Every structure is written in C-alpha cells, then in structure tokens.
Image (cartoon, rainbow, N blue to C red; front, side, top):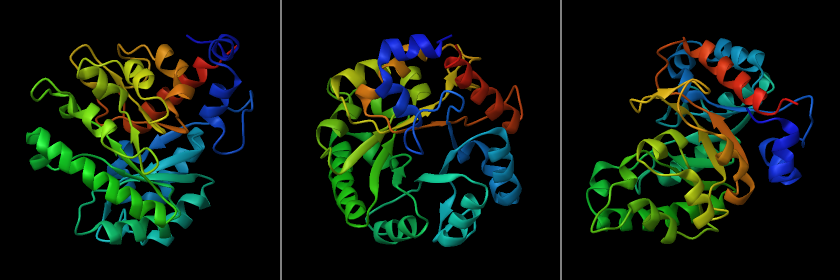
Length: 281
C-alpha cells in the first residue's frame, strides 16, 4: 500500500498533481478519480441518468464514454449526453469510439459537440492486426485521425489489448504504432491489465516512450489472466503509478470488462476505495 507521504516523496509533487490536476489541483482531502463507463455499459443504456448519479455518489470525478454509435452516445445526442454527465458534476474527458476512414469526420464532429477532449480508438479492425503492413496502415490512419482531431480541438488516442504485443518478424506491433505516429497528433491509453496479460511491463514502455501515454486504464488481473477489481488481482500498481509523470499521464480511468465477484457498482466502489488507500497517510 502506498502512503501519500511516500508516494509524493518517491515521485514528486508533479506526479501527485498529475493524478488530480486536470480538474483543480492536488487536494490531500479529496483525491480525484475517473471511471470508464464501459464498466457500466448495460446500465448506461438502460438508465443513464440513474447510473451517472450512482457514479457521482460513489465519488468519481471524471468519466470516459462508451457506446457511441450512429451519432449518439448511449442513444443520446452528443449535446444532451454532455448535459446529462455535467448535471451530475462529472467531467466528460474521453470517449471510446470506433473510427475509420469513412466515419472519422462525423465522429470527430460528434465528439467535439459532446465537449470531449480525447477521442480514443478502442481496438483495431482484424485486418490490420494480421500483419506488420496492417499495423503500418493503422499508424498512417492514426496520424490522419490525429490531425483531424487537432483541427477540431480534440486529441486522438489508441487503447491496446493483448494482440498489439504479438510479434511479427521479431517486431512488436505496439512499438511500431508508437514509433510511426506523430506525438503531437497521437497519444496512447495503455490498458495495464492487457499489457500485463501480454507479458509486458507498462513501466518499460513509460521509460522507453516518455510522454506518450496521456490516459491510463487501471484494471487488475487474476492469475488466469482475467480482469479483476482493483486490489483483488496480481498487478502491483506501485511502480506503474510512480512513473505516471514520466509516462505523461493526465487522466486515469478505473475499468473492468466483466464484473464476476461483485456487481459493477460494487466493483467500481471497491476499486476507487483501493486507489484512495494508495494515497492514505
């Protein structure tokens, strides 16, 4: 368990600020936390108002949207979705939205209308995952999408799974995506669970590509490589959090794809409590 005192001593005030600064700075009495709404995806479609009320009640401060399709977020128009999130005192930071060459302009426009800062591509089409040439095509698209996002006042990001670490001709595709994209146009959202499941150390990437990881997905993992509630798995988050400043992290999101040992609301509360304990004196 990381105490706030030792955390700041090891990583500096800038790191502590990085975890909370996007809203209003570092307040020892109020550690700020973010949630990936994909964790509550079913509830968000059934009752977005009540679900967001629960997210705010538990104590989260910012959220990442999921469920964008056909110009709507969880079946709500972009501006209406933004208003609903803000109604509950939450900040809508990012969105996982599938984009391609055909829909990129529409998705960018809708994301901007929703007041979102980061447009995150959550995964790659299967065709791009079959070869290094496919990953090179993905990198080219990332740069194009990144420029379109920048022109609209957004930031483009990519979220990994395990497939990006499967070697082709001795090369790890995730490294190709990092090296072949323009840092001024493209940032990355490392999913700590899936990095670990692929036998990779997030800390190694933060050291090798400093400043490239502005968003984090914090998700624990069981010994059988299934995602778990924070603090109930095998991942040691201490060295990962200690490199947040070097990584370039500005926002983090608790996420869980499948909640098995708890219902989703219980899981996100336990995960947030775990993070708060990381900063306890």
